[in-house]
Structures are given as C-alpha cells and as structure tokens.
Length: 219
Image (cartoon, rainbow, N blue to C red; front, side, top):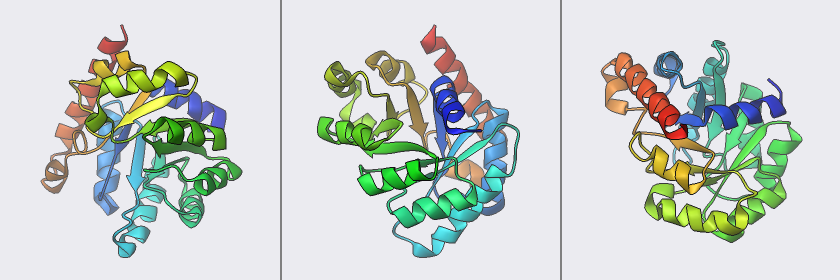
C-alpha cells in the first residue's frame, strides 16, 4: 500500500492498537486476534530503556507485516533516524513517536513512510506539521482531557490530531466530539495478562467492542 492509500486508511479506520512489549509468537497471535476483531493497524513500540529488545521489536514488526489479511504494522516510540531506517527495513509502513523530532520526521518522509509525530503543546503540534508529519499524536491525551484538544484545535483545526494515552472504549465519543481523527490504544485493549494466559479470544472480543463504539460515535 502506498503512502496516500495508507493515510486514507488511517483516516477511515481511526484505531491503532499499541502492542507494547509483545514479541515473538505472542505478537503474531495478538495481531491475528486484533484483526479478527476488526482492528488491522498495529504499532509495535521500541523500548528505549532496553537495548536488547530492539531486535525483538524489529522481529515482531517483520512477522506482523508478513501476515497479510489487511494488517498494517507500524513502529512506535521511534526516537532516532537509525530506528526509522531499521523499522522501515523490517516492513514498518508508518512511524509513531512520543515527541516532536524534526530529523525523525524528515527521515520517515524520505523513506516514503507515513509519519505520526507525538506532540503536546500548540507549538510542538504546529512544528510537527510544518516538518512533514502526516498526523500529530496528542500525548498524553487522557491526562490533558478532551477539553484541551478542543481548545488546541480552535486555531489548529487544519492539522489532523490523534488521541493517545488514556483512551478507552468509553471515551472514544468524547474525543471524537473534540475533533480528533483517530486513536492509539495500548493496555486498555492489548491486555498483557490475557496474552500471557493465551486468552486471545478476549482481545478479539474487546477489539469488536472498540469498533462498534467507534461506529456508534460516528453516527
């Protein structure tokens, strides 16, 4: 899928599942469970505190990207241009950062990948957009609340914002009403205890709930 098609898909699907610390066979089974529940955009974040997990992250991206079935893998917590290159080589179709880094944005665009830059303040959001981010992830959205996003969007409504951090199936509509175009959802969806227990059917069921709540909120 090319850049423009993926950007359109993100705008339409709106939900990105964040698979933090999920590697190997568990990553594959989690991805399959999410896809069965209707969520096909999946972020595998780098763990910046654990260098030894870097290869696990890249392996998970590679394995998920090879699944097909309409699944689209992305790399998260991308903080260096080297990580952009490694993730792209592993098959990551988009890069997601926790912060605004002009060099990371430029490298992502240079490689033809979709960029979702993290930001919080109006200045950071505007700079991320200026440097070429396709979407801007407001993080941590849950701590700031939907009222903050609504206020920020007043002068910056030309910039597509995504809410990440503290998003759950019960506040999707609240953030949509504030003007976000999509969401990144981590532990509230990708439940580590369920994965350890092999209860992947629970992830599928919850993914369906998120998809249904989103459809209801958009009506």
